[in-house]
Structure formats: structure tokens, C-alpha cells
Image (cartoon, rainbow, N blue to C red; front, side, top):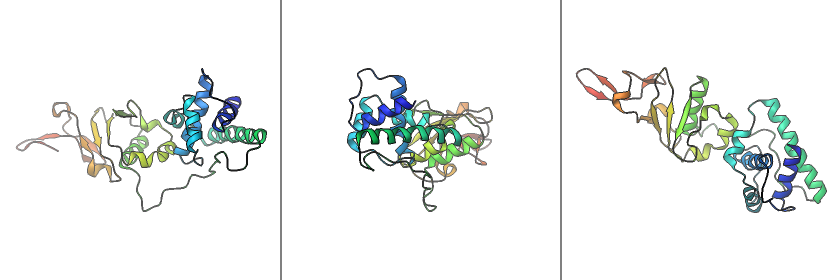
Length: 222
């Protein structure tokens, strides 16, 4: 990947044009460069740099998914990425700060600001090895519980404004939960969109029912 990242940084700097038929390796490299700022692992690309990388076919979503979850693998990737940037800066004679810099430790969100509702629910699912699937929208088909937590942290602001319909496989049941935008506690605002006829008698989530259920003498309730 070294050569791919050297080319990606050179394209971002405007030193070389985007190739008409970029390789998959180059597209992966530019996608990772686009994704790193979203995960708060690198300072922001400017508008022109972002446009140049997108012209290669870069996709920040793909870049976020391509980030390794293991610390050693990620550190090794960062050595390649920012070593390649240093090489390009030296060859082009670019001043410090012309190209984005790494963030050695992603800043934590202030304690007073809770994570996005969807991210809290996904963290709960990940901790229990529960499969998830996003239905609709730009993340359709994604199992966010398998994403690297750092990548999701980078999407927190976006998830806080993006309502999700999320299918979860839970104790043999697969309800579809509507998770509204915001930063509320999931079990206080999540609602079940699974048809009542497909619901179990009880579908516990965070220790309380979320799906519709039938109670003798009362009928269907939530």
C-alpha cells in the first residue's frame, strides 16, 4: 500500500492528476484518507484536496470500514500513511501543515455530551455479539456492530441527526427498531416496527419490552 498512499497524497496535493482508471488499491488509499478525519484520526483535508481524492473514486464510508480495529494493525497502517505523506512533502517541498497531520490520540467527546442514540444502541449490540442491519439510507445493509468503534465515533455527529431503522437479531427474534435522531437513551425512544403478528410475547431490550406484545384482557400494547 506504500505506493498507493504516496500517489494518494500527491493527488491530494494537486501534484499529479487523478488517473482515468485508478486501481482498487489507490481507491482504497484515497478512501482511507477521506475517512480518517471523520474518525478524528487526522486533521481535515481542505476543499480542493477532498475534491481531488473524490475524483479518484474515494469514498469516506469505505475508508472508515477499511480501518483495522486492532491497535498494532492500525499503528502499522498509520506508519505507512504518514510516512508516505512525509515522502510527498519532502519531494514537493511543501510547507508543514499543507497536508493534514495525524492525531495521535483521538479526543474524547466531552462527558456532558452523550453519544448519538444510534451509537449507544450499536455499542450495546456489539457488547453482546448481536447482529445488526441498517435498513435504508446511506448506510443501508451495514452491520454497524462490526464496525471499528473509532470509525463510529467519527460519525457520531452525523448519526445524531440521522434516524435509523435497524434490524437486530436478538434471542432468536429479529425486530426492526426505529431509532430516532438525537442523543437520548435508546430504550427510552426506540420503537418497534415489526408487524405485531411477527412479534414474540416479549422482546426485551435493555431489560424492558420494546416490541409490541399481546397482554390478555388488554390487547396489543407497546
